[in-house]
Image 1 (cartoon, one colour):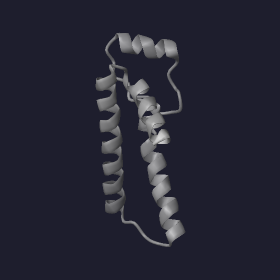
Image 2 (cartoon, rainbow, N blue to C red):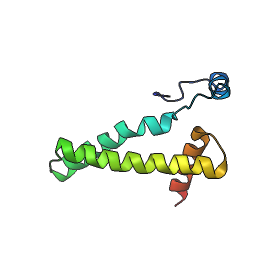
Image 3 (cartoon, rainbow, N blue to C red):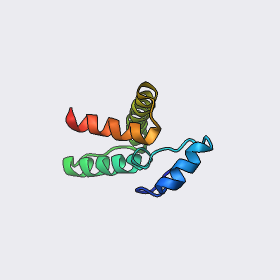
Image 4 (cartoon, rainbow, N blue to C red):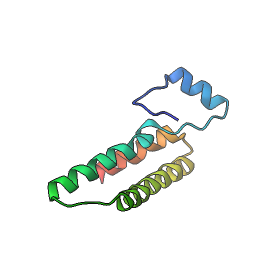
Length: 95
């Protein structure tokens, strides 16, 4: 799993992929923390509270949806998860 911004070199990525290692793309793995930061900012801006349970539920919903989109795109387009994550991100920007 890539847990930083671009932590695996292209050569290492290709070697891991050749060995059948599933690599969770950094932009997907990191997005959970970014989303929770957004929730914190939004609740502060709105002067509201969000319980831990509600935060976890919202995070689970968003991350499950994002992961499904990436996995589906990877299968449909026959690309690896990292390429699929970029494809989903670019489609979101265009839409």
